[in-house]
Length: 158
Image (cartoon, rainbow, N blue to C red):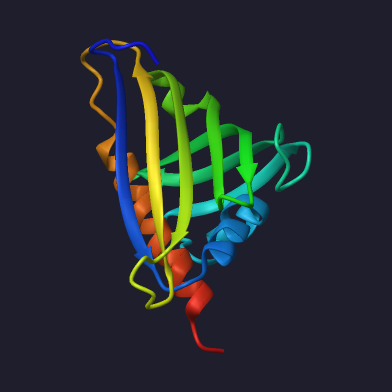
């Protein structure tokens, strides 16, 4: 991304109890199950083209952001099970009303202290349509909150 007042990058870490493999599997391979973990934030995820968990596939999220129902159409740009990472790029939807480009990358790493669990590192890279658009801090907070909900679901005792 070129350096301009319109481009930006936001990052955040979320500590989870699930393994890196469990979390990546849910987000990359089973996004249509995410709404079961946080129905107040995500209403659904549908496959538009391709296969879940495959690069080049197109998925459509229905979610709530800043109190409003929204839609996001994304292409899966990368999934690397060896690095427990995935990248999704917005191609249509509500975010395109404010951003020329926006993508989200997650990388899940084992906790370095050996206590089990993992750290999900989120990176949002974007170019705003004009300087009056806010940086997507609330979107980054939303993915952090969804991450915590998915973790609670994955680690809940049966």
